[in-house]
Amino acid sequence: MIKNLLITGGAGFIGSNFVEYFVQKHPEIRVINLDLLTYAGSLENLKDIPNDANYVFIKGNIRDSALLKEIFEKYEIDSVLHFAAESHVDNSIVNPNAFVKTNVGGTFNLLHNAYLAWFDAPHCCKKTKESHRFYHISTDEVFGSLGESGKFNEDSPYAPNSPYAASKASSDFLVRSFHKTYGLNTLLTNCSNNYGPKQHGEKLIPTVIRKALNGENIPTYGDGLNVRDWLFVGDHVLAIEKVLFSDFFGAHFVIGGNCEKKNLDLIKEICALLDAEIPREDGLSYASQITFVEDRAGHDRRYAIDGSKIARELGFKPKESFESGIKKTLQWYLEKHREEF
Figure 1 (cartoon, rainbow, N blue to C red):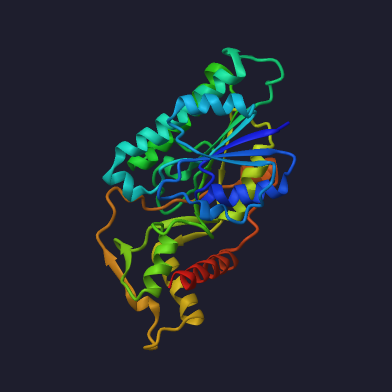
Figure 2: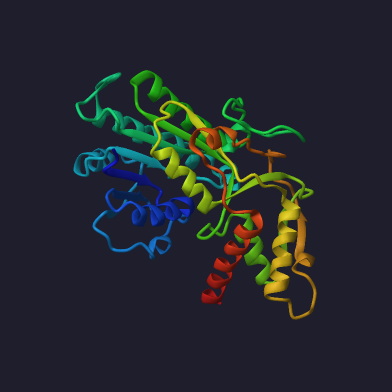
């Protein structure tokens, strides 16, 4: 039974969407939200959370082992949901060191402190802590790049191609090792590209919206034909909730949106929605702003997800189509745009 849940990175994109949903859905569970509030995390993302007795925010770094020890003891943490990560591939190419420190070192600190708080020795839980759990959120990028056919599943080999993907793969392996060596009850999911409200402006969809509305070139890597599977963040939140309350310890699930799209097609769809919502004064389509730029180094060609395991074992299937999800996303960013300009 979960009573005190430590969430890391709960002020970021996926984390804040989850926290907002979970705090209101589960008032019987105390949520301790630990976030360093770097450029990708903001308290603005949490402004709609009621000032409830079951929610605590702590500004801090998952690389701070002493802080983690204090949090585990003070709040009697029985479950960890680990979102916190450096996640932008372009940034990982420029500054891979930060990704290794946070995604690998930070994950290790969390795992080690959970083990020390919950175990007397390997595979020997402290009394009443047998059901304590550690849930690690990861990415499909750890599997590398697909050809024109096939999909990633839970048996796909790891083949990360960017420093970001490699750091997440490393953290996945650490999670596996703590389950195998120490007996930690671990849960692990690898999700496809998320989109929706509260996503940082550096990501593709918010970048397209912002550049279009500002009359700037919309940068498109290479030939624009790289394929991604898109998962609405609200659907991801529901999948995470199902996994969190499950007992598939030591296993993992891949989570996708059943929505493969070429980047160029995605950008054109957003431009068409903007054309209908806020037409340009000159009558041209926002698609006229699309500009092809030099491709990202090591750019994976295609990702796709086979979500049959999580559908079969936990009954999860995405509720949102891309059409419904992107309209909700666009409306959120248009409102944000109006507030800023």
